[in-house]
Amino acid sequence: MKRALHLGASLRTRLTLWYGALLALTLLGFSALLYFTLQQSLANSVDDRLSLRADLIRAQVGPSVGNLGLQPEDVAPRQLESTLTEFIQPGIYVQLLNARARVVAVPPNLAGGELPVPESSRQAIERDQRIFDKVPVAAGDANVRLLTVPIHLSGTTDVVGAVQVGESLAPLDNTMVAVERLLFITGLGALLLAVVVGWLLTRAALSPVARVTATARHIAATGDYGQRLHVMPPRFGQGDELFFLAATFNDMIARLEHTLESQRRLLADTSHELRNPITIIRGNLALLRRDGVPDATRREAVLEAEDEAARMGRLVGDLLLLARADAGELPALRRVPVDVAEVVSEVIDQARQIAGNRELSVSTSGSCWVLGDRDRLKQLLANLVENAVRYTPGHGQIHLRVAGASYARAASTVQQVTIPARFRTTRAVDMGPATLEITVSDTGIGISPSDLPHVFERFYRADKARSRAHGGSGLGLSIAEYIAQAHGGSIDASSEGTNRGSTLRIHLPLIVPQPEPATKPEVPGRPTAPAAARSR
Image (cartoon, rainbow, N blue to C red; front, side):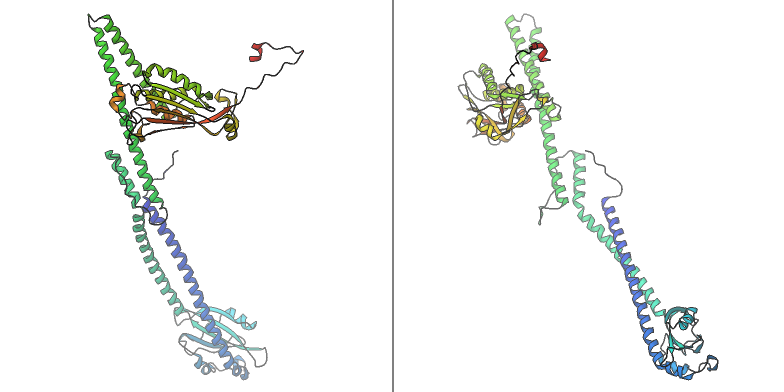
């Protein structure tokens, strides 16, 4: 399966940019939240101070204003300013209004005169409400937060005036400007520091990927498949993704090295195996071209050339079979119920012709039926028996044992199924966990412990000179392993050592064939169709 890779900037750059963008958004959101929260808190503090001061002024100045009982036009300008002096502080402005929102006392500390009286303040006095406003002053560039609070006549609800308390917003504005500058500088510095640290951390975290890339490039450039990544075992847990990446890369390179080595060995061994018969055939052809060669010698040369050609054909056929098996291009096996005991008898009869003085014996027990391709199973057994004959000296012994299960026990351990139509049979069988074991034992040269893991490899020989002398190609066991696995079974080899014989053991799924259904009795009086018609 192909997977699309989006190429572009390096992974390190993309991770750093994503990390920086995420951090920038986080810092921006945090800065905005902090800024507006602080601004609102400071503004609430100003309003609380204005309210407290206005209530205090109204409590002290209100009675005197109400007791004057004067109309606005009768009040002398700045007559009440002296009463406001004790409430004055830097940046705090206090003035008094009458019931008609006319200024009767201006702030003594305001150089520009009186505070503006907005229309909203006039309406608030008429409605007997307190109201906050923000008004500009000529004395400075900052605005003033202004609170207007009505003053009542003592003991009544009649509005006789209002007190206005204002506080300059210059300190608040200056504070917020300083906070803005601080947030910008610290946020930018934190972002730059985080990007640099993120770049370094990403570089350290992705260093195994860089080593994998460098190793892969080295292998691609030099063909040195012996290179491996140094993978440290995890200290905690089972390891992270990069650990598994490096370990998987090492496994992949090891398998690739093994595959290439097998291909090189296969090519070399195939060339060697084909060169020998070709050399013999060419030699015999050169002999036949000579004049005066006796007829007996000619016949012998022709027979030898035919034998070598047949041997070469078998080798090419075996190689083609294994190549198709590797590519998955082999046709489906013709699976039918097969009596392995019968196949073993045929293989033993054929092997006696080449066995010479070697003793061949066979024993069977229990049900020996499997579901498979009869020709392939015969090829499997023939390869094992021929291999045993080849590696067993004269007067040696070769024994085949076929051990199945009794019908009763097999029937109790399997489940009934019907073979699909593609297996070219309509007979019902039982299939399940019961297995058939086929053992091929000999008293031959045996297998050393170092050679035992490789006996199923192609062209592998524990004794190369001995096998070539006996005509072996080194593919018999590889083909046997493929056939066993294609039938859902397995094959293994064992030996106690050199010159102590060897044993090959095959396990195949066992079946219990069911009897053919009985022919239905013909109904009396009904004509019977001809056989040809019934078969259609």
